Image 1 (tube, one colour):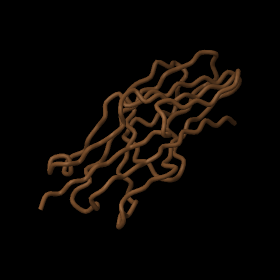
Image 2 (cartoon, one colour):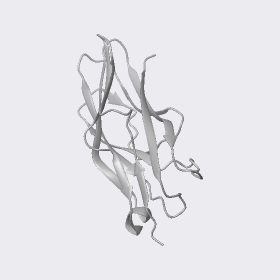
Image 3 (cartoon, one colour):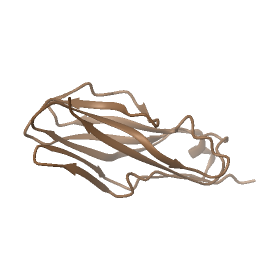
Image 4 (tube, rainbow, N blue to C red):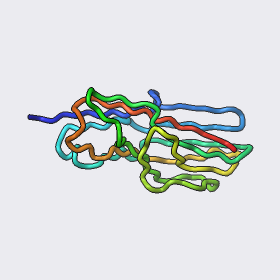
Length: 157
């Protein structure tokens, strides 16, 4: 019997998402296709990483801000048990001199907001770079297509 599993990740269903006004700016840019294919024993038994998966661009002129991420929705075939979620954000770098509280360890996403970094106020737009990781699924996930949507939120005190 051949096991075939395809996993897809959809990032807000577009390659770029923005929220902004004259003082605040949050943009998420998918730098590449955000799809994982699990169609061999090696891809089921090992983590897969999309290097340079996306860039988060942030400006907050008037006050400090915090950026959060969570899984806002997910789908899978019949029999799929969502937890634990196999998707991780992996911080790689930033050009910001105003960043603090960056989560440097791989962050397993859940359906709750999780802080990924904070930034002091600044007139400049700064970039934060992330890889996307699919944890090894093993042989317990049902065969089929999986979709995960990541929601990013900017908050200010």
